[in-house]
Image 1 (cartoon, helix red, strand yellow):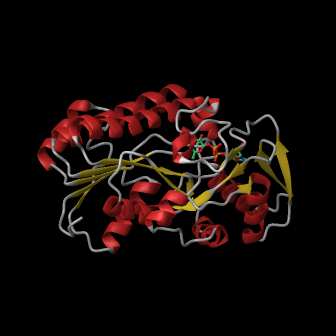
Image 2: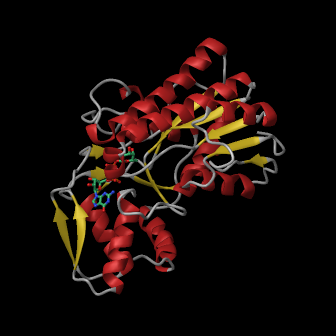
Length: 310
Ligand code: GFB
């Protein structure tokens, strides 16, 4: 990417999009374009097509999506399916029509079958049944991958797909009904600490295993792949190591210096038992993450300490 190339970051107000914008700015990219959802509703084909026709971006980072944790995915099922299908269809088709040089589409590790062997290799896509709590989101993301793959095959578009593992970092969502586990536990544990509450509630059994990547590492990986990867097959982005939800809670308790007890709420779902990425392909291309989970949690906890929660 030339430093003055016109780069559109879709979803720049979200955790991922904002990290990509920060990283582009740090590297001296000077022509980054963004639009809020009020300015361009990406679910609206007319608005997306007019915007692309006017701006004609050279590069597109497709980080706009309706996202959320296990409860939001399982509750707003229709919205997760419809919104994501519309957003990605509109942006990918408009990128093709306006001869965008390259597009990077962001998916998620939940696209892999629930019971796939671990670690998850890129080749396991569409080899089994999905986890039901996030099936609508996963189906939409699989459609996005297939749009990129088939626009490449039929039209020769240089569109690539990357699959990040569970992410955390600045601009995360701390709304307990919509958030992912890491920000939710940071909020709950911090609140319990400052209010002297003796227990903290952790959903499910605590046994599911998850892999966590700091969003600044993800942004760096996305730029690396935008520059260095030009093939149809998706690429996993993760750390290659995972941790149980119980141990994650204990790590956050250590960082927050909270001495209370964990109480498991078995009425809440566990979701997929394990979701560990095989990151051999990305490593082979020459990229590895830099921020360890403990360092990342310490960084994010500093922000949480400055937040006010009800
Ligand atoms: O992060 P999370 O919501 O999503 O939950 P998934 C991960 C695990 O943490 C589940 C448990 O076993 C939850 O039951 N957990 C424990 C909690 N306490 C909490 C809590 O207070 N809040 C939350 N949210 N979880 C999502 C998918 O799955 O992962 C999305 O739904 C997406 O589609 C995303 O792929 C990356 O890892 O289960």
